[in-house]
Amino acid sequence: MTKIYKKPFKETVTLKLVFEMFIVLLLMWFICKYFIFSGLLLVADMAGWIAFGVLLFLVLAVCCSFFVKYFFIVLHDNRIVVQNRLLPFFKLSRNYAEIGKVRFWMPTPGRFPTDSIEIVLTGKKRGGLFFGISMVDPKDLPEIVSFLESKGIKVDTYKELSPKQYREVDRKIRKGEL
Image (cartoon, rainbow, N blue to C red; front, side, top):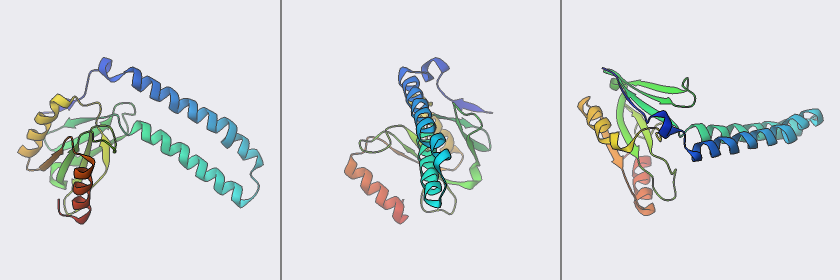
């Protein structure tokens, strides 16, 4: 049995999403036209190529920060898949036997302002990759948690932490206590 947890497309495409996409595309166009492509004509020494590489890295980081928030969750009988809504080929798939813990992080002031999931593999004390699951309806979270717990996975949900509580939880995770 496969269960897909994602919002309908009408709820997915919001004014905020369109505005963010427009800003990212405008920023990429501006940087590519006025810095990268014009800089390629002027790059003749090693310092120029290093500056070009740093600038290209920054452009890619901005693009990735936009796309990393729009994931949804697919639960299969033997594995979990966290897949991007805008780039469907960008996904993470893990068997339940490989997973030691799953952490759900709900929005907290002063950190990533989107619901996110962190999948920690068995044998790792510290965290794994964070994926923003803003495409999952928050009402589905209890159902997802109960399904994962029925598969024998420890699930932690962190909601509405104050900045001080968040720092304390983060410190315990880095020490391997949680």
